[in-house]
Amino acid sequence: MKRLIQILFFLIVLWSGNPAAAQQYFTIPDPAFRDYLDRNYPFLLNAQKQLIIATANSYTGTISCMDLGIKDLSGLEYFRSILQINCSKNPVEKFPSLNGLQGLTHLWAEECALTECPDISQLKNLQVFDVKSNNLSVLPNLSGLTSLKYFDCSINNISVMPDLSGLINLESFYCYRNNIGTISPVMNSPNLKIFDCSFNNLKSIPDLSKNINLVEINLGMNSITELPSLENLNNLERLYLYNNSLTKLPLLPSGNKLTLINAASNKLTSIPDISSRTALTVAAFDHNQISFSDIIPQVAHPSFASVFIFNPQDTINNFKNVNVSAGSDVEISVQRDAQISSNSYYWKKEGIFFDTTSFNSTLLKSAQKNQEGNYIAEVVNSTPGLEGLRLIFRTVSLKVSECGAISTSYSYNIVSNSCAEGATISIDNINSSPQSGPFKYQLVSKGVKSLWHTTAQIDELKPGLYDLIIQDKSSCLTELKNYILIPNAEDCDNVITPNGDGMGDYYSIQATGKIKIYDKSLKVIQEFTGPGIWDGTDFRGEIVPIGLYIIVINGKDKINILVLN
View 1 (cartoon, rainbow, N blue to C red):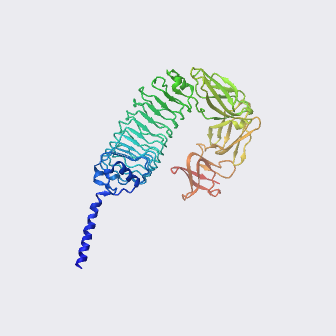
View 2 (tube, rainbow, N blue to C red):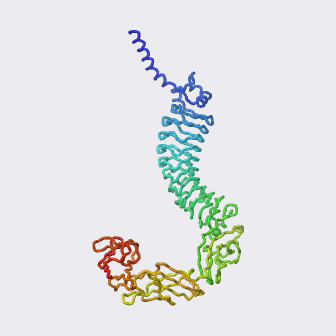
């Protein structure tokens, strides 16, 4: 028994000593990483090719193990004094926490197929962090990286950027080719020189007015519709805005350091005069909707021909639908460049040339059915340097109706309205052609048609809702359903007699909103959306009993009305 106790005591002592011994060495699990250390830093390993932890702790050099097929970088966490790590182009599946590497200044991990970043939030000495070309969808907390100068997370699957306000020493920021929708402010980074967020889903960007040392801004291939002012950025040299949805340029730097501006493929309809910016070597504005009134001033630039790119422009304007009656005159205009006398306009219908003018409109006299179609104008300018530029403007999509009643627009106004004489209305035929008249008018109430009226003024109308039928001289008809609403005259009592005799059958409500009608027990018996009429019926369409009813408009305005039958 005594012998057994001695053996057990020996085993316990032996076992308790193993952990201490284990802390002196670490077995590198990845053979490729272990071989790299053995070839380049044999003093870091013992005879069994284990990492000597104390030696790794004090190593202050660089590890550059690019493109070696390393999958597991376990062991890096023991290099607490290391300055630089470059593990790019390895299929890294596991990355240990690096927060203990307080001396680390540079970390490159490009093209590593990373799906998750190591925790680096405590690395206050880190100056370069490059995780470009991975499979990252989320970035770690960056707020503690107060020494960071270079940041690159481009070519990943990131949709949300973390807070950038703590990056007070940031100089270069790259996040291109991701799915980022918003960027947090970087105004706490006064040394920022490069800001590249191209190829993302941005619709706007933060205010950059305090980043006065910016040299390059790249926002190409986004969905930005408007930009903040760049007027304070007098060190800006390169501005990339191509392939966005901008309709106007931001205020540009007031200095003359700008050498490149690429705003191609936007929706710009105008640009400022930048001909005095002599440092420009590239000014690309092709594939926009800029007309000659904004292009001509740029010709004054001393190197206009080699610097400015305007050709081609996208087709300008959308077609405006125009409906006229046969025989009407139609003016077609490009709606731009009215003050430019050096333009020549070539007018086409469905691609077929038919006229040329020196001003921005043409007139179709007495339009006929065979002149229906889409009309464009091709415009050239005689200013030297613009000879090869041809702008195309959409103008009108023309419909010609041989029925004047259909192609005419209508309005009416109530001239007078009294309880004794009824209402008098006047009908206005808007954009009607003289060739279509004279017109005749007929009103319809509850299926009953009036006689034809040969004048545009109709009188003795009772309160109610009327259809309007119009007939032109060719007997062509158009009908406007529920078009005319005649309200109750102010001098009438609030009484209706819904007996179908055409006298006081309705109560007209001109207010807009929800209309509810209550009986004397405050039960809702009818409701509808105003303006409209109440014909004395309930939800079932039956005439309500004689009595007092309340019309409530939008839950507040009340009208008492008496129903007699």
